[in-house]
Image (cartoon, rainbow, N blue to C red):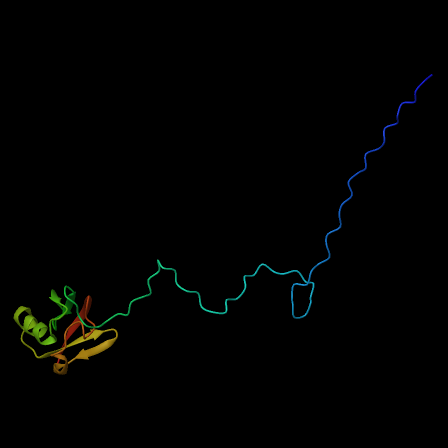
Length: 144
């Protein structure tokens, strides 16, 4: 007698599982639109990390060691350069110019070209740092 051979049973093909129904992404309106990848807007400003230092305010007063390199255009068109401490007064710079200039002894005011600013005798007691001439500036001797 023959024993029947079992017939192979076909293996079931895996069926794709349907995706779950979309969940609402907007709690206030229950919209099922998909969310975008835009990051949320922060409600408070970010706190700086400990390695970040905030910018320091700048000061117009001179500290020890600040130097002012000044370039002068004399009344005859020649040039002169000099370096001063930032705490030097404009009166001391005028005295230096009177001793070093080669264009005669014509009375003068000092002037920057841009922005145009004339430094008359009323500025003599101010320091180069207070006048904003540190670390460098170009000044024109302007005949009075």
